[in-house]
Length: 279
Image 1 (cartoon, rainbow, N blue to C red):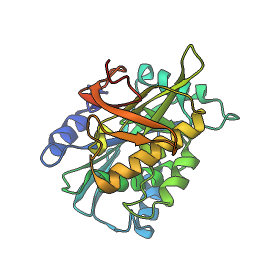
Image 2 (cartoon, rainbow, N blue to C red):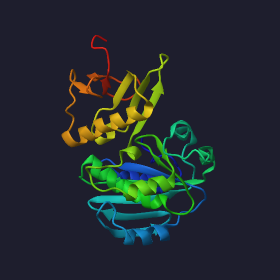
Image 3 (tube, rainbow, N blue to C red):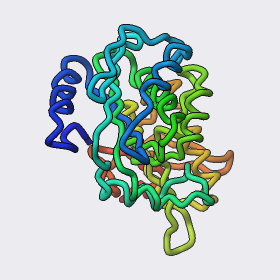
Image 4 (cartoon, one colour):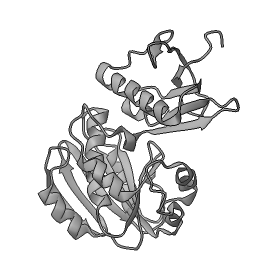
């Protein structure tokens, strides 16, 4: 979902939207702020000293009127301070389901954030994972600044605790080991018969079908880890899970793969596992 029109009175967002569409489709992250300011000076100083996913920022422009731009690899990066709240209606669901938020920190306080940053990466020709690694690195640096309340990753509808996002972003090693916990929502639910189910959000942005598992007898943590293993397999081998194939969770337990319309509102077909072959 594009967020460029979140503040219709802000002409900078309109200008950014036009610029972003001159190359590849922009990818976005948002940083919720406690107050009305962002420490651009500290952010820029650290940017000079820190490689972002093994490349250095260059061609700096600004900050001017709450906007700072630079080039990272072949991407144009924009960090923009927007003088409004991120739409609270879009945050209510993520506040209820976030797995990347400590229990001792009341996530409900995010309703009181005052402003937010829009961080956009656009124009590059890199692969989907490489582009998101760059966005993650920049967002992680922003997440470590004073006054940051949360990071919102819209492709996964994720709210992430800032120190955790910054830590995971700093540990990015290579495109073969991307921080999938930041990029994907692995939503587990419980069925009436006591079994678990799962659906992903964010895989389509990486170039793959979302995964949905209507019913499986597996603990939630184990289920998420298994699905992550499937995603790493897809990243390494490409979209090779065809309709009618089977995939194993254990040596004894195999699941039929069907390409089916989503049961959870995702566009297009999804990889449905453990579906009845006759359904």
